[in-house]
Length: 128
Image (cartoon, rainbow, N blue to C red):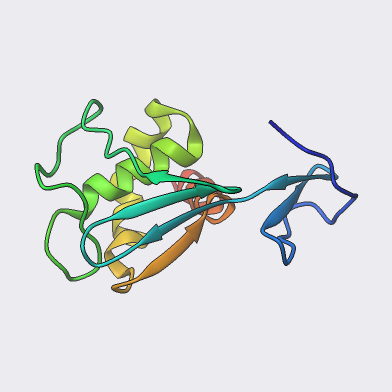
């Protein structure tokens, strides 16, 4: 659901976590990772754990990993893309490249926005 707050430059975030899209301002989604393999999704005031999307592909029975730590980062790549893109086919198609370009270099603690993930996905699709 989009909520119009004010006109804003498209594609730029504001101080309160809102992003301008086509002249509308919508709430941004934040994905936050902690070394324990826990990834939290924050949409406005609501928080929940990121679904690992084992239904699409099971890369790791232990859940998420990233950077040089334990676990298989491919599961996180798939889960982030599936949630952000809301398109399972695109997520499956892009998650290996997203893993190599983004997830493998994440630090111990990190935050990614949905808009950043969408930008990465678009870039990966253009690179072929």
